[in-house]
Image (tube, rainbow, N blue to C red; front, side, top):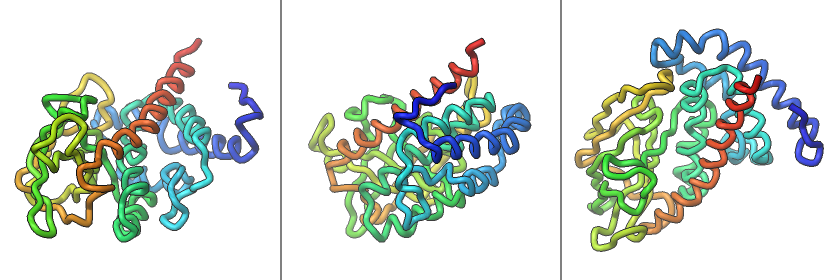
Length: 263
Protein backbone atom coordinates (compact mmCIF):
# COMPACT_ATOMS: atom_id res chain seq x y z
CA UNK A 1 0.00 0.00 0.00
CA UNK A 2 1.35 3.39 -1.03
CA UNK A 3 1.19 5.94 1.80
CA UNK A 4 0.45 9.57 0.98
CA UNK A 5 3.23 11.74 2.47
CA UNK A 6 0.68 14.47 3.17
CA UNK A 7 -0.76 12.34 5.95
CA UNK A 8 2.06 9.99 6.95
CA UNK A 9 5.55 10.75 8.21
CA UNK A 10 8.52 8.64 9.30
CA UNK A 11 7.00 8.10 12.75
CA UNK A 12 3.84 6.67 11.23
CA UNK A 13 5.84 4.29 9.05
CA UNK A 14 8.07 3.18 11.94
CA UNK A 15 5.00 2.51 14.08
CA UNK A 16 3.35 0.48 11.31
CA UNK A 17 6.53 -1.58 10.92
CA UNK A 18 6.57 -2.25 14.65
CA UNK A 19 2.93 -3.36 14.64
CA UNK A 20 3.61 -5.60 11.63
CA UNK A 21 6.41 -7.38 13.50
CA UNK A 22 4.16 -7.75 16.55
CA UNK A 23 1.38 -9.30 14.45
CA UNK A 24 3.77 -11.68 12.70
CA UNK A 25 5.30 -12.88 15.97
CA UNK A 26 2.51 -12.68 18.54
CA UNK A 27 -0.74 -13.13 16.59
CA UNK A 28 -0.59 -14.80 13.18
CA UNK A 29 0.96 -18.13 14.29
CA UNK A 30 -1.73 -18.65 16.93
CA UNK A 31 -5.03 -17.24 15.66
CA UNK A 32 -6.44 -20.54 14.36
CA UNK A 33 -5.74 -22.19 17.70
CA UNK A 34 -7.29 -19.27 19.57
CA UNK A 35 -10.41 -19.27 17.40
CA UNK A 36 -10.94 -22.96 18.10
CA UNK A 37 -10.43 -22.34 21.82
CA UNK A 38 -12.78 -19.33 21.65
CA UNK A 39 -10.30 -17.23 23.62
CA UNK A 40 -6.73 -15.95 23.58
CA UNK A 41 -4.14 -15.39 26.33
CA UNK A 42 -4.71 -12.33 28.47
CA UNK A 43 -0.95 -11.78 28.28
CA UNK A 44 -1.45 -10.52 24.72
CA UNK A 45 -2.88 -7.26 26.08
CA UNK A 46 0.35 -6.54 27.94
CA UNK A 47 2.43 -7.35 24.88
CA UNK A 48 0.31 -5.00 22.78
CA UNK A 49 0.73 -2.29 25.42
CA UNK A 50 4.50 -2.64 25.27
CA UNK A 51 4.58 -1.49 21.63
CA UNK A 52 2.14 1.36 22.25
CA UNK A 53 -0.95 -0.19 20.66
CA UNK A 54 -3.16 0.37 23.70
CA UNK A 55 -2.02 3.91 24.37
CA UNK A 56 -2.92 5.58 21.06
CA UNK A 57 -4.69 8.86 21.75
CA UNK A 58 -4.68 8.57 25.54
CA UNK A 59 -3.07 11.04 27.94
CA UNK A 60 0.63 10.63 28.64
CA UNK A 61 0.14 10.90 32.39
CA UNK A 62 -1.74 7.60 32.31
CA UNK A 63 0.74 5.87 30.01
CA UNK A 64 -0.79 6.88 26.70
CA UNK A 65 0.46 8.49 23.49
CA UNK A 66 -1.57 11.70 23.16
CA UNK A 67 0.10 12.88 19.93
CA UNK A 68 -0.97 9.78 18.01
CA UNK A 69 -3.39 11.05 15.36
CA UNK A 70 -6.07 8.79 13.81
CA UNK A 71 -3.71 7.74 11.03
CA UNK A 72 -1.77 5.70 13.61
CA UNK A 73 -4.98 3.81 14.38
CA UNK A 74 -5.62 3.37 10.66
CA UNK A 75 -2.19 1.84 10.10
CA UNK A 76 -2.53 -0.35 13.20
CA UNK A 77 -5.86 -1.67 11.97
CA UNK A 78 -4.45 -2.51 8.56
CA UNK A 79 -1.51 -4.39 10.04
CA UNK A 80 -3.60 -6.27 12.60
CA UNK A 81 -6.00 -7.42 9.89
CA UNK A 82 -3.12 -9.38 8.36
CA UNK A 83 -3.42 -11.92 11.19
CA UNK A 84 -6.78 -12.95 9.74
CA UNK A 85 -8.76 -13.04 12.99
CA UNK A 86 -11.43 -10.42 13.55
CA UNK A 87 -12.14 -11.88 16.98
CA UNK A 88 -8.63 -11.39 18.32
CA UNK A 89 -8.34 -8.00 16.66
CA UNK A 90 -11.59 -6.59 18.04
CA UNK A 91 -11.27 -8.00 21.53
CA UNK A 92 -7.66 -6.88 21.90
CA UNK A 93 -8.63 -3.32 20.99
CA UNK A 94 -11.98 -3.20 22.82
CA UNK A 95 -10.65 -0.49 25.13
CA UNK A 96 -10.87 1.92 22.19
CA UNK A 97 -14.65 2.01 22.74
CA UNK A 98 -14.73 1.35 26.49
CA UNK A 99 -12.08 3.74 27.79
CA UNK A 100 -12.47 7.05 25.87
CA UNK A 101 -15.56 8.08 27.91
CA UNK A 102 -13.42 7.63 31.03
CA UNK A 103 -10.68 9.86 29.64
CA UNK A 104 -12.96 12.60 28.35
CA UNK A 105 -15.73 12.60 30.94
CA UNK A 106 -14.40 10.91 34.09
CA UNK A 107 -13.19 12.77 37.18
CA UNK A 108 -9.46 13.24 37.70
CA UNK A 109 -9.54 10.71 40.54
CA UNK A 110 -11.36 8.14 38.40
CA UNK A 111 -9.01 8.57 35.46
CA UNK A 112 -5.92 8.22 37.65
CA UNK A 113 -7.34 5.11 39.28
CA UNK A 114 -8.52 3.29 36.17
CA UNK A 115 -6.74 4.36 32.97
CA UNK A 116 -3.15 3.30 33.79
CA UNK A 117 -4.25 -0.30 34.27
CA UNK A 118 -6.18 -0.33 31.00
CA UNK A 119 -3.43 1.27 28.93
CA UNK A 120 -0.79 -1.07 30.38
CA UNK A 121 -2.86 -4.13 29.49
CA UNK A 122 -3.39 -5.12 33.12
CA UNK A 123 -7.13 -4.42 32.96
CA UNK A 124 -9.75 -4.74 30.23
CA UNK A 125 -12.37 -2.10 29.48
CA UNK A 126 -15.63 -2.88 27.65
CA UNK A 127 -18.58 -0.82 26.44
CA UNK A 128 -22.10 -1.90 27.49
CA UNK A 129 -24.86 -0.10 25.61
CA UNK A 130 -26.80 -2.63 23.49
CA UNK A 131 -29.84 -4.19 25.19
CA UNK A 132 -32.11 -7.11 24.26
CA UNK A 133 -34.76 -4.63 23.11
CA UNK A 134 -32.51 -2.33 21.10
CA UNK A 135 -29.06 -2.05 19.59
CA UNK A 136 -27.80 1.29 18.35
CA UNK A 137 -31.14 2.84 19.30
CA UNK A 138 -29.57 4.27 22.43
CA UNK A 139 -32.58 6.42 23.23
CA UNK A 140 -34.69 3.28 23.79
CA UNK A 141 -32.51 1.79 26.55
CA UNK A 142 -34.21 0.43 29.68
CA UNK A 143 -31.40 -0.32 32.15
CA UNK A 144 -32.02 1.98 35.10
CA UNK A 145 -29.86 3.55 37.81
CA UNK A 146 -31.60 4.84 40.93
CA UNK A 147 -29.76 7.25 43.24
CA UNK A 148 -29.32 5.98 46.81
CA UNK A 149 -27.09 8.37 48.74
CA UNK A 150 -23.55 8.07 47.42
CA UNK A 151 -24.46 5.19 45.12
CA UNK A 152 -26.53 4.36 42.09
CA UNK A 153 -28.45 1.08 42.17
CA UNK A 154 -28.28 -0.40 38.67
CA UNK A 155 -30.75 -2.96 37.31
CA UNK A 156 -31.23 -4.18 33.77
CA UNK A 157 -29.65 -6.13 30.93
CA UNK A 158 -27.06 -5.62 28.23
CA UNK A 159 -26.31 -7.98 25.38
CA UNK A 160 -23.76 -8.64 22.59
CA UNK A 161 -21.09 -7.05 24.80
CA UNK A 162 -17.60 -7.55 23.37
CA UNK A 163 -15.21 -8.89 26.04
CA UNK A 164 -18.13 -8.92 28.47
CA UNK A 165 -16.88 -12.05 30.21
CA UNK A 166 -13.24 -11.12 30.77
CA UNK A 167 -13.60 -7.34 31.16
CA UNK A 168 -12.69 -5.64 34.43
CA UNK A 169 -14.67 -2.47 33.73
CA UNK A 170 -17.92 -1.76 31.92
CA UNK A 171 -18.77 1.68 30.58
CA UNK A 172 -22.54 1.44 30.86
CA UNK A 173 -25.45 3.49 29.54
CA UNK A 174 -28.26 3.74 32.07
CA UNK A 175 -31.48 5.68 32.50
CA UNK A 176 -31.26 7.89 35.57
CA UNK A 177 -34.49 9.85 35.05
CA UNK A 178 -37.47 7.53 34.42
CA UNK A 179 -39.73 10.49 33.73
CA UNK A 180 -37.78 11.26 30.55
CA UNK A 181 -37.89 9.39 27.27
CA UNK A 182 -35.68 9.19 24.22
CA UNK A 183 -32.23 10.77 24.51
CA UNK A 184 -33.08 12.60 27.72
CA UNK A 185 -32.55 11.16 31.18
CA UNK A 186 -29.60 8.94 30.17
CA UNK A 187 -26.31 8.80 32.07
CA UNK A 188 -23.03 6.93 31.69
CA UNK A 189 -21.49 4.99 34.56
CA UNK A 190 -18.21 3.13 34.96
CA UNK A 191 -19.03 -0.16 36.66
CA UNK A 192 -16.56 -2.59 38.19
CA UNK A 193 -17.26 -5.78 36.23
CA UNK A 194 -16.58 -7.87 39.33
CA UNK A 195 -19.30 -6.17 41.39
CA UNK A 196 -21.85 -8.21 43.30
CA UNK A 197 -25.09 -8.57 41.40
CA UNK A 198 -23.64 -8.94 37.89
CA UNK A 199 -24.34 -12.17 36.00
CA UNK A 200 -22.37 -12.85 32.81
CA UNK A 201 -23.51 -15.34 30.18
CA UNK A 202 -21.33 -16.15 27.15
CA UNK A 203 -23.00 -16.00 23.73
CA UNK A 204 -22.26 -18.36 20.84
CA UNK A 205 -21.52 -16.69 17.50
CA UNK A 206 -21.09 -17.67 13.86
CA UNK A 207 -17.70 -15.96 13.73
CA UNK A 208 -15.18 -13.96 15.75
CA UNK A 209 -14.87 -17.00 18.00
CA UNK A 210 -11.76 -15.78 19.83
CA UNK A 211 -13.65 -12.70 21.02
CA UNK A 212 -15.83 -13.41 24.02
CA UNK A 213 -19.29 -11.89 23.69
CA UNK A 214 -21.63 -11.74 26.65
CA UNK A 215 -25.11 -11.11 27.92
CA UNK A 216 -24.99 -9.12 31.16
CA UNK A 217 -27.61 -8.97 33.88
CA UNK A 218 -27.40 -6.25 36.54
CA UNK A 219 -29.37 -7.04 39.69
CA UNK A 220 -29.31 -4.14 42.17
CA UNK A 221 -25.63 -3.43 41.50
CA UNK A 222 -24.24 -0.67 43.72
CA UNK A 223 -22.10 1.84 41.82
CA UNK A 224 -20.41 4.86 43.48
CA UNK A 225 -21.76 8.20 42.31
CA UNK A 226 -18.12 9.18 41.74
CA UNK A 227 -18.12 6.72 38.81
CA UNK A 228 -20.49 8.95 36.85
CA UNK A 229 -19.04 9.92 33.46
CA UNK A 230 -20.07 13.44 32.59
CA UNK A 231 -23.17 14.97 34.10
CA UNK A 232 -26.21 13.10 35.30
CA UNK A 233 -28.87 12.81 32.59
CA UNK A 234 -26.39 14.07 29.97
CA UNK A 235 -25.05 10.68 28.93
CA UNK A 236 -26.39 10.80 25.39
CA UNK A 237 -23.69 13.37 24.57
CA UNK A 238 -21.05 11.01 25.98
CA UNK A 239 -22.33 8.14 23.87
CA UNK A 240 -22.50 10.11 20.63
CA UNK A 241 -19.01 11.50 21.20
CA UNK A 242 -17.75 7.95 21.65
CA UNK A 243 -19.51 6.64 18.55
CA UNK A 244 -17.51 8.98 16.31
CA UNK A 245 -14.21 7.16 16.88
CA UNK A 246 -15.89 3.78 17.21
CA UNK A 247 -17.30 4.07 13.71
CA UNK A 248 -13.94 5.22 12.41
CA UNK A 249 -12.37 2.14 14.01
CA UNK A 250 -14.95 -0.19 12.44
CA UNK A 251 -14.28 1.41 9.07
CA UNK A 252 -10.56 0.83 9.56
CA UNK A 253 -11.18 -2.83 10.37
CA UNK A 254 -13.34 -3.31 7.27
CA UNK A 255 -10.74 -1.58 5.10
CA UNK A 256 -7.90 -3.66 6.54
CA UNK A 257 -9.64 -6.96 5.86
CA UNK A 258 -10.71 -5.81 2.39
CA UNK A 259 -7.05 -5.18 1.58
CA UNK A 260 -6.19 -8.71 2.72
CA UNK A 261 -8.93 -10.18 0.54
CA UNK A 262 -7.86 -8.23 -2.55
CA UNK A 263 -6.04 -10.67 -4.90
